[in-house]
Image (tube, rainbow, N blue to C red; front, top):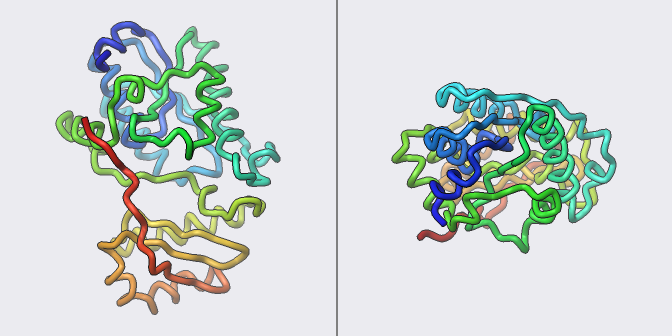
Length: 255
């Protein structure tokens, strides 16, 4: 089944919307198909502010209503204690809340943007998607990340080349408690690096120490600017290290 046929079979649905490449293309496709859809965005301390702004901008450009749900993620100790399967508990909480709000709005179907490149074995959250009977049209129709980027570019979506950006909680070492303070420091540090012109990076923390990971294209600049970087980030962390093994591009596959 191609995506158009899939959406023709589910013409009224709520969409779990993050503002990322995949959910943005899914939302666009549903709108183009003439489906009755509403985008639901969940705001927690795990998402940086720019993600919400991107989501609101895309929904506005598409003329689609976006509903924002605020969740106190720190009220769930299964999540903030940061076990290996933290993503399962987080995804279940977020999608569960969206399903409740969507049901109140009369939607029986909920869709989300997992694509065919996503590794099921490496994503505990996939179990929550299955348990809650949430549909993943891009994955079920065989659309990979490469496909989604290409199709998004053809559609004129500004998200087409947006770097993948996992939530801030992924920066904290497993089994180390996630706190407001840590997330605030991570978000502030990454923003300063973005403002320097870097992209697709991670500031990972263990205790009050930071390990910065850049893509290969930015390694030379990072080394040249190391003093400036250390000067900016030393207000947040006791030590700052550069990971000499560059971040890998995990976006694989194409039809």
